[in-house]
Length: 241
Image (cartoon, rainbow, N blue to C red; front, side, top):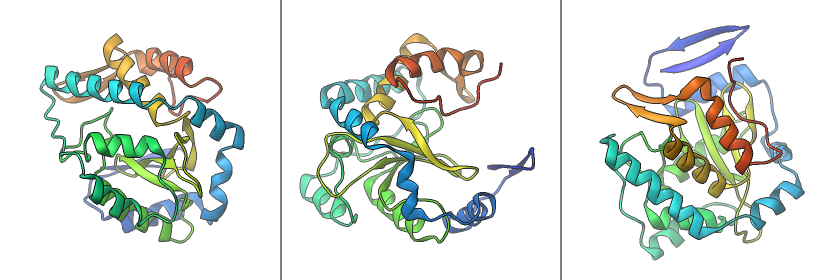
């Protein structure tokens, strides 16, 4: 199902549209945008902070905690085996930018999932699929997707993409891209995203039920966790007053 907000109306479309057709809605809703200029959503200071706070040990600990949560709650998570180093190098070389160390840590842990439940509705993309979606997103005219964003997690017309660059980085800002308003800075880096979610699961701010995910009290508890781990960044989702 795709949800599109148009003139204050929310339109739900139950369908299995392919990615290019989904992006057609993006063009209609966001208008003509130059994807090359969309990196302006992140400042150099934010890039520096993302790199300074990158921590592979904490990132891996958060991943393992999230995996253990799924195991305890029988969510149906099906992680894929980690990519061999040679295969990771081959696939990552296909991007026209240097993948941040955080992404190498992530895909060296597991190569995505074959389910679609990893983090609060978002699917953890295998590297092969991330590359395929990157090519579509970055080559679609006026989509607003930057060639410096690598898709990592997705959910029905919504992607989290990590910024890459011309030089190696330990960590990079995490961008939230939607059909409604293109891209914006969402988390300080990939590690802070995973740590935020890991802590939210531990504290019950986000829970798993038989019918899927649920953010407690309109996501207010999670927004407080978010603010602690991502200072100076606006919470990426609407919170009911």
